[in-house]
Length: 370
Image (tube, rainbow, N blue to C red; front, side, top):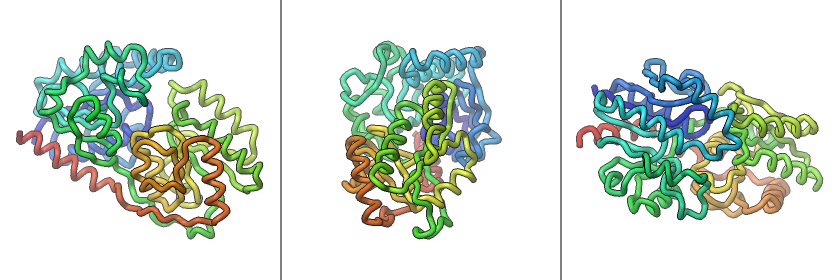
């Protein structure tokens, strides 16, 4: 049994990266003592039910000023810009004071300069982003990269994983090192209604935030209804403090429409009930690094639609009748599927949790043996 540190910049955004973090902790707890180093207002137990993770035995360590730092970053979010790299710098520097106590370090918060040996899971690179066309990195990324960004030589001696082939390509472009692809854990959602019994509704699932383009989802459904399509929209997601102004705008627009329903911070049981009883799922984030919500739509037996870019292309097998490159194209694509009365055909059960946990344990133990 080893002493393992898991470094994660924050659980506050309550998205796919946090699902990976908790599943990783759960996997490693079966064989090792695990301590989670993080920063934020959200504790692992707050998300355990939503992500179906047993992390009761985990030890959590945060900086002494964590409550003040977390609240300040949440308030400054709309004006401060991208925060994940900065949060990684803070957590990484805090962890370094304790690094000598651990046999293995695991980052579930992307690549970062850590003591070797380490295992690092990249959702999307967070440092050295200046030359990437599709990166939104903020003005201070060069500074954060200088403080905590790893060198290429360091990553060549690191067990490096990525959530999709698209992300792996991006990592290789920056560091000339290609990670092994390990898709995130997505639980199977069995017991859904037959297609004829499902509601003719669209679900957009995930964090209610500007990059998820939830307001555009309302626009898409409005346009479909203007064309005579009898569809409604369920917005289902978390509403972190950081995005409060945007959440208020989404709430206002939803309240104005009888065909739009907003449900915040729902239980896993409620989420799965919606996925089992609706036909269509929508994602609108451009270049989504993997697309947990898209995978959940597929797992639930729904037809999923997403932008034509990023890791979500892998989930949908690159199908042109499920992918789009603009809001207008999204309306046309969904309308065509509605009029043809398409049925789900993308394979399910490709991203199950036990597969993910088993491979995490294997990679962690191989890294320890090295």
